[in-house]
Length: 404
Figure 1 (cartoon, rainbow, N blue to C red):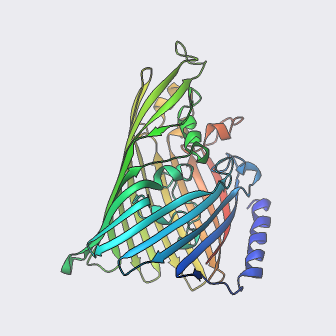
Figure 2 (cartoon, rainbow, N blue to C red; figure 1 turned 180 degrees about the vertical axis):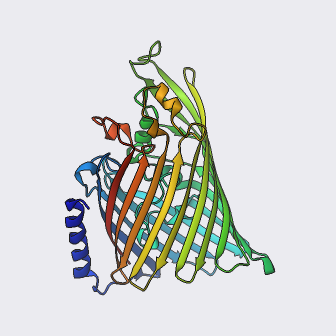
Figure 3 (cartoon, one colour; figure 1 turned 45 degrees about the vertical axis):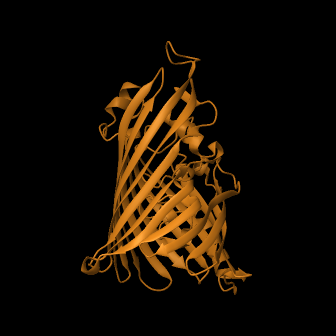
């Protein structure tokens, strides 16, 4: 293991051991419940800058901070909101945002209504992706839960329905539906990802305008105790002003507006047996881009298998294998080679292993290693001087989290 990772791992662990016994609990003020979390991470990669634009040198620019407030006005009516801040290299930079805020009226078990800024029901874990203490892994499978696009799949301003439908001997169904307006701040990663997709041939030239987005999920709590099966869908449109690079013959220096539409499908399964949790998700995104000068369409594919086992109250071992193809019809990169791009930009395969230590009720420390094959999520603008000759590479992450 790289000496930088060893030294900073020791630092995190020492900090946790010093503070983990502090007597802290969730606060309540005037009947308002207050919870929060602070996560500080360190990331190092041996070949490419990944997630954080300086990870080759080792970086502490990797954190999340959140505080939330909730109030029960009656048995049926609840209010809540969360303020959130994160740093991911050269994006977000601890800008404070309204993560979610809602009014929730549960009329019946099978029908509740929410309004405000609502979490989008996307996959098994979108609603907990900010809270490190609620999951085993530090970095979630990037083909589905891409950190750079967190705001684009996090929440929408609008309304939603949810409920639990009891099915007797065949279990129950939990459903959610959210529709509303999406706001994705360009400073929080969305513009950076758009420019990556442009491959140096086109860049975003102003703020994107989003149409309404819609997201829904149905999960079946099956008669087999611990087995959960589900489907999620997420669709939306945006208009993006783009500038064409001077290097593009016949179009260099021109500007246009591109219309981009997407539809995400996710099939999910999770099985819990005692201290063992197994999960699987299969993801397809149908993308369509049109403008007066360029157009493209592709279907992205990703899936992962994950497992975690809690050996005792303080130690959990987790692992996953994930695969991502930006274009499921070009898994070997033949189309990219034609544009003088490396073929391994066409895939990303990730084997991850996580060690989680629950130091106390309030402190969690994790260390995680990733063996990578492919560079489909490695951003060219974060690696300007790279020769792109390596398909196999590694990165490691350590993180300590305090939550109350």
